[in-house]
Length: 146
Image 1: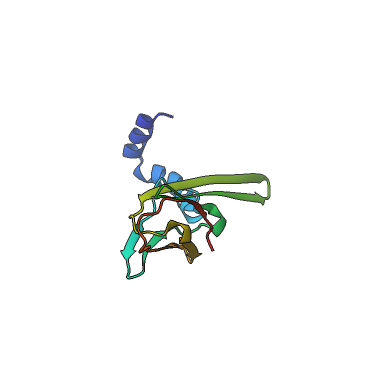
Image 2: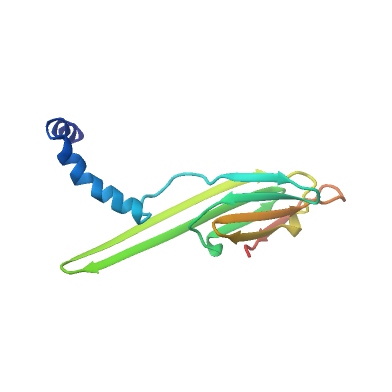
């Protein structure tokens, strides 16, 4: 059925189209099966001895994150795969979703890149970037989320 046919059907029988399609969309939303092509919110705070970066990334696990520093460029990325299988009576349904994001930040010259630490708790990824008083430092590092 074409999109135009659905539009015409909706004009003639307004409740039928909504009643038919609404339950499925609500079920997908309720079970978090809609993929979201969004980039999580990111905040950077300049504190006395460090910069603190927080990323709102609910629904992920510590192992989903990949955090790298290369030549004073910080890259935060994550990917998550979810699978939902349901076996009832005479039908079988299996749903699959995949989501990912990547954020890149150029670090200030006073960041001690080899001492960056990351923590993930209750949907918030926190990176602590200590300040270096010795001057600019270019390093390459893989940050492990705790």
